[in-house]
Length: 239
Image 1 (tube, rainbow, N blue to C red):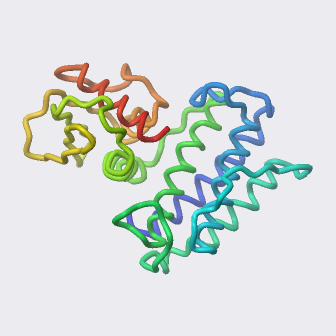
Image 2 (spheres, helix red, strand yellow):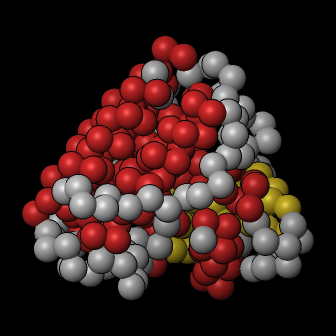
């Protein structure tokens, strides 16, 4: 997705998250985040928004990653933090240098992409807490799959975890990714003959990678063990 599309998605997803959270009792459990309530979710996402804003403006990783709304209304507190983040993430400046945790992308665009996906997945969490199931937008979800497989697995795959060296293809209408997990590295191998193929809508595949929907909502062909190893590797990389 281009920077302006990501910025638009971030605005929409941030607003939708606030609306859903405002409709739920603060102590309502969040299905996609075991042990977390809606109040916890708002504090978590609000903290991330504030800390990323600080990371960008100060040019260094913040020492603390947890904030609290204190006596403020939690939803208002969240909205203020989201607005500050959106103001900093100007899509016209996406190519500008910025401090990030990605070795190959040290631009403001990294954070624009990362925050659009972070907020979108947690919007799904907030809506699930009130019984809604709105999917991710097609373009955003396809980009989210790419982000999980290239950024998260590329940067954070734990050595020795869930590796088999056998390829898995993920297919959505119009796009396909094939990856194989080896000791400490990920191969991106579009020409490989996969041991398994996972198919579904972009939203379903992206949310499956993030543990928000089950394997039963996908089409899985081939060795399901390899598919589960990929999912376990993603869970370890994103935890």
